[in-house]
Length: 390
Image (tube, rainbow, N blue to C red; front, side, top):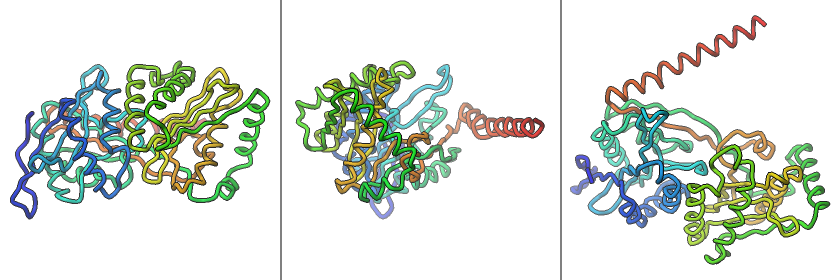
């Protein structure tokens, strides 16, 4: 492994050093120290756990290479920038990005309170040392007040790495700490009417059964059969026709199998299914940790779209979750209209983009930070003039 010059830690005779982790075995060996960092962060997150990145790597390993920047004190891991190396359109642009998948809701650099500034500088210095191996660094899914947009961005600037942060979307959530009746009373009449119609249509179509496999209540031997049902529903959903993210595809399947085993062991896994006359029609795959519910996948059999089994399942599970002492139900990043029918509350999500201090990086920075905004502004002005003239 290639390293970068050690960075002295403030107030200590020992030194920090960096290793770039590109091998799966070395990545696997970091689990204990990795999760210890997560537990000591101000905002621990299931999406920062080694288990999450392990599962994400099962999906990404066919199209990317690990490029994890680990900061060590001796042999102990103290900070992590969990990256992979991938390629942009036409494979012209060499991109470093977070090890994420479409199911990721939040991501960030991992740093405890100890040596935070020194660790950020060590990461930035490593990127400078390896500058000819990348052109653009994209850190997406950043929550508000993220370490990446704060400490790391400041370190990048000190190391003459041009960077810019921008908000990109919102992650809506439903509060779960109020009684269901009180919360549901705040929803629109049109939503309640639609929910009643769903329930009536399904009831007339046959016998409806909703099952919940709760965290800590699922045996490892049960997980595989549950995921078989989940995969079957996903394979019959609209995603099969419009995306490559259906769970029967190789990458998503490897991801969901690995995540389910690891999440079951950790007590995070929660799966809901809706069946009609014994046939599974809809499902929701969740992780529950730290008082929050993260809805990762919600699919339904497209052949039964007129019955709206997914909408009915969503209404029922929200009602039941309200009585479990939980705090938030995150619906996933995106300002989709159906999410706004359930809540007006959300958490901001942003992206930090940085550019290698090389000729290729400077070209990419000029295009991203100068030319594209000017073109966008020009198009907006033209559109505004046309609307005014019409």
